[in-house]
Image 1 (tube, rainbow, N blue to C red):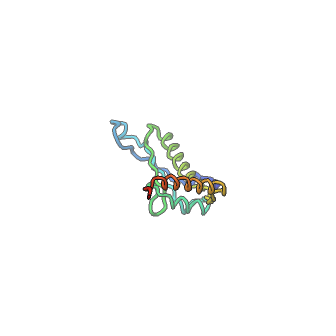
Image 2: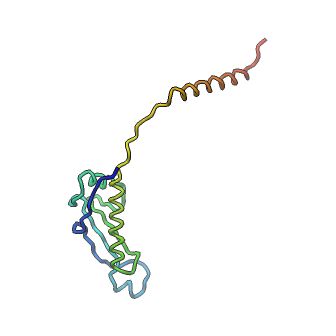
Length: 134
């Protein structure tokens, strides 16, 4: 089962920042990395989904309930922005998946009987190993 949701792009705050790592002059002067911030409490997501998101043990979710995603894999700002939004969508998608409730099952009467017969046979084999008394 899945909780239906619609992600409103207006509730996502995206800032362009300078990327880390090697890249020479280009990385020092161009802001191509993206910082995405999404406030769970202020969003228009269903309350059940908000609670499931906050309960996720994900390092990208702060204690205040803000999702922070940094994307810097691509050289283009648009590609990094799209990747950050995809990662946010995937994170919300994982929280929206509701696991099926487990219903405990009983073994059938025939399987219980087979088990007991097997135990009886095994007990007979072990009894046959006992010392013979005269």
